Amino acid sequence: MTESLLTKSLTLSYGDSNIIEDLNLSIPLNEITVLIGANGCGKSTLLRSIARLLKPKKGSVLLDGEDIFKLSTKQVAKNLSILPQAPVAPEGLTVLQLVKQGRFPYQSWRQQWTEKDEEIVLNALKATGTDHLQDRPVDELSGGQRQRAWIAMTLAQDTDIILLDEPTTYLDLTHQIEVLDLLFELNQQQKRTIIMVLHDINLACRYADHIITVRDRGVYRQGKPEEIMTTELVSHVFDLECQMTSDPIFGTPLCIPYGKGRNIS
Amino acid sequence: MKNVKTIRLFQQKISFLLDVQAMKKLLVISFLTLAVFFLSASFGDSFINPLKVLQTIFGQGSDFDRLIIIDFRMPRIFIAMFAGMALAVAGAVLQGIIKNPLASPDIIGISAGGGAAVVGFLAIFSDSNHSLTVSIEWMPLAGFIGATVVGFFVYLFAWKDGVTPNRLVLIGISVSALMQAITTMLMIIGPIYQASEANKWITGSVKSADWNQVQIVVPLILILLLVTFFITRQLNVQELGDDTAAGLGQSVQKTRLYLILLCCCLVASAISFAGAIGFVGLMAPHIARRIVGSSFGVLVPTSAAIGALLVMIADIIGRTAFSPLEVPAGVFTAAIGAPYFIYLLFRNPNK
Image 1 (cartoon, chains in turn cyan, blue):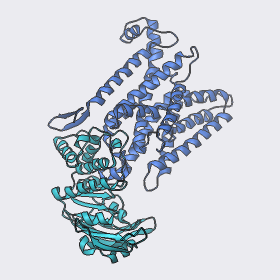
Image 2 (image 1 turned 45 degrees about the vertical axis):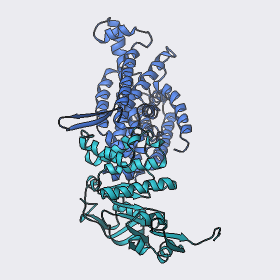
Image 3 (image 1 turned 120 degrees about the vertical axis):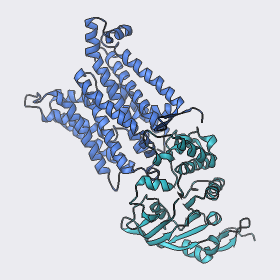
Image 4 (image 1 turned 90 degrees about the horizontal axis):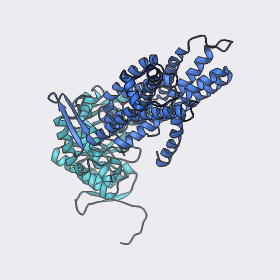
């Protein structure tokens, strides 16, 4: 079981410009954490770096107190999995073949399908509701089904922590809810730690236990959505004037932006 | 799970999941390849009854038939078969790295490097009487070295905090163009008879194969194919994209370097004797993918079988269609390959 995931004076950069500077962050475990912020604020970069996909310029990401760049890629892959933004499956690859790849960090060339592999892959298919699709090619599925298949792959990796970079991009609202509901269930039933980047503030408030807002090369504020989400925060993080109210169904914060549009009230 | 079979041996020390349908298809294609292999020995200047061919191979038959079949025809069939397998598997590996069905060893410059080296070899080792100062038997070695060295340089130039598939293709295409320019240049300023010798090599022909070549190439390619077969799961993961592969615990760049190295060795050993037979590395893996799907465990052997089929059939056509003239096998692979390439472009307008 993973005990802690922290960043320590983390500085991230592309070329000469720093994207994140000197960041100390503790990710709450067994909860859903959502990173939000304006385009280009560095939230995806931060997520990639936590997943060991980007080497920090300075500082480190610590998994159970150890620098993830000092651990082997396989060791990291057994503790945290990442679903990149808009992944593309090779033409004709079936759902089962894709989900099976999640077992990669546990396999060797002669052990590719142990009883444990089979059990975990079948569970992943079941949990994501893709078991009836397992013989279908991934590229022939609908957007929501496809994303569920990819999530099944990360589940097959059997990690306590799952990171997702904008898992709802390119999906229509129905499929966005489908995917977020699935992640919510995984967190509720299996206590997986989920860390993801989302664009939609309102969906973030609805699903997240913990929100981290990224601005000016660091974290502006973090905490429970109902405690931190204010008009002042939205104005500062997104440069957007809005009114905060609460969701009539869920009671979670709801952000209604000002601006132009038809006014019939 | 329909259509799959779980294999677990020695208390799970060995375990695999097989796609039964794909395995059946692979089996059929393999038998077809084997059939064409034997049938191929029937064709040539004179047609020999396939039954007689089998008899001759298994030690019976007349001395004359033995001479024609064992000494003349078998070596070139072997070379055609193994060159086809190696080129096809190299193409499959490359398509896995680059994640694009249009990728092939011809496009990223490996074959063109071999071509330039062969022409360079002929130019450098010619004296003023236009005859070679060293044995022509060194020519394949020149091709081998040219292909691997150019492959290495393409990799090096494509490096920028790691090698991305796109850079690999762009650098490959430009290096390939440069190599072709050098080749043309050398052929124009070089002696004429050597231009024709070089041209045969560049198009790809198995005409001059002999048993010595078979003894070098067949074991080499077999070993490389075996290595490829053992790392198919790395290819499966690599094809999911760099971020996903890294997330799954693969050292993406290290694996990519090994895969490209493997690819260069496969192409170099195939073309050293058979010449730069084009388009096999493009077509075979693509056809294989449409038949057995995208999982490399079965895709690699299927590509190999189809590659062997393509080159053997091209060679049969080459030595019978315009008899007594012999047309290099590479002419026919290109004749099918070029339209196939265009078809692929039309089919994938956004790839």
